[in-house]
Each structure stands twice: as structure tokens, then as C-alpha cells.
Image: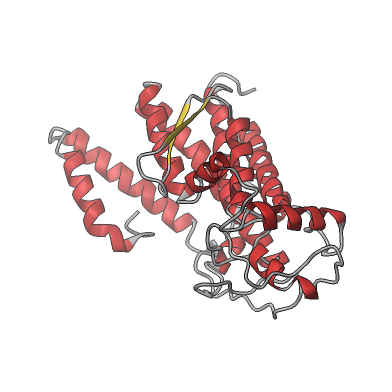
Length: 317
């Protein structure tokens, strides 16, 4: 963690010291620390040339259907190198590449456009209060949401250290690969966000769409292309991988990092995945196809990984 997040060294060192203080001094502790450090170094060496932080830039010129920085920040694309990172489990990111997004003159695009324009605007009169609550609940940091839920799962299920490690590895490695696939898609397809599409609808060649230069989403769009949805792929990979580890009844408790103090509970992954698909549309930051394609990627990566890795002991041939 200090190698990949050096800014957090002080906090991490303090946490390590407090953890080790609970372990008696002696040969066992010394050997354990040495072994842990050796394993960590082996992994760091293994991933030394995996494409992380490679000098990749977003270079697509603005055009109808093509992403460009969005208001209010107009920030450049974040971490464009991520799509070129070597996956942890999958053969390549291309293995799970989604189909191309809808053409701007297609019926699907027209439906997606109309839906997000009506349901995702800041002052939408079509979106209900309950839908707004769902949207805002899933408008924060998906990684923190997932990590917190996994810690709760380990505690609630009384998992031992080995079982907990297996659960965290299975879920987090699956999420990592699904996110790599997602960023490759974002960079390859460079599909514009709804705010750009609605502002510039008079350039899309589709007579069924109408421009509204004053349209504002409920949530400001993140600084990367629409297709496919990162939040959806994280939640889909997380829930599906967890289903493979603990079974179909998840008994999940989720917090929101955007609406402090709110909690939602889900017994089934499918219900959570469906809520997140809708939420990102109601926030005004994704077309539905970007959400459903991301959900498919997360589920497919999790299914593939679970059939090849992290299988329960005793089931191997």
C-alpha cells in the first residue's frame, strides 16, 4: 500500500504499528512480518511493468458523439492509462469488450436520450422524490461503499482470516479487471456524456432529439467518457463475485458516501444492480445503454473468474 499510495505512508505506518502491538514479540511475529513483506515485494515486482501510470493521453477531437470535457470543471480525462493495464485474472481487457454504443440516429439512442433528458435533469419534474433519493445514494465513492460492505460481510459472517482474505481477493481482483475493461471502452469509444449530447443535439443528425443548451444534470458528470459506466461495473462485479463466494443471499448493508448517515440493505445482488443502473440515469450522467453494458461486463468478468479462480477447497479435479 505504501508503494502504490505513498501519500498515505504515515497513516499506514501508524495502523501497522497498532496492529503489530497486539502480537507478542518473538520468532513467530518476526517471521510473519518478513514473510508478509516478501510476498508484497514479489507482487510489486510482478506488476512492475503492467501499464500503470503509462504516458497515455486522451487525444480525440470534439465531434458529434465524441466526449469532451464537461462543465463546470471542464477537466481532462482522468487516468486514461487505466484501460491499458494488464488484467489480474482475465486474459486481456479485450476479452470482455462491450459492443459499440448506439449510433446517434438509432432508436436506442433516441430512447436513451429522451429518458436521461427527462429523468436526469437538476430540476426534473418527471423524477420522483424516491428516485432522487436513490440517485443521490449512489452518487458518491463506489470503492469506499464496496470496501465498507466487505468489512461488514467478514464481521457479520464470522469469517476467519483465511476466509476473509479469500473473499477480499476474489471480489477486489474481479472488480479491478472489470474496471480495466471499462476504461479501455471509455478510451476506445469516447462516447459523449448526456450533458454534451443534450446541449449539442442539433449536431447529432437525429431529428428526434432536441437541443437544450441550458440543461443541467442532477450531478456534474465525472471527467471521462460515458460508455461504459464505472460505478455500475464496480457494483456488478462486486455483487456477482460476492455471490460466488458466499452464496446468492448477500444480506448486504451499504452506506452512502454522498448522503452521510443513510443505509440501504439488499438481500440479492440483482436488486442492487438494478438500482444502480437507474440511479446513474436519474443523476443525469449516463445513458441507459452505458449502465446496462457495464452491468453485463461486471457479471461476465465475475462469472469467468469464479469458474477459474478462488474455487472452494475440495472442488478441484
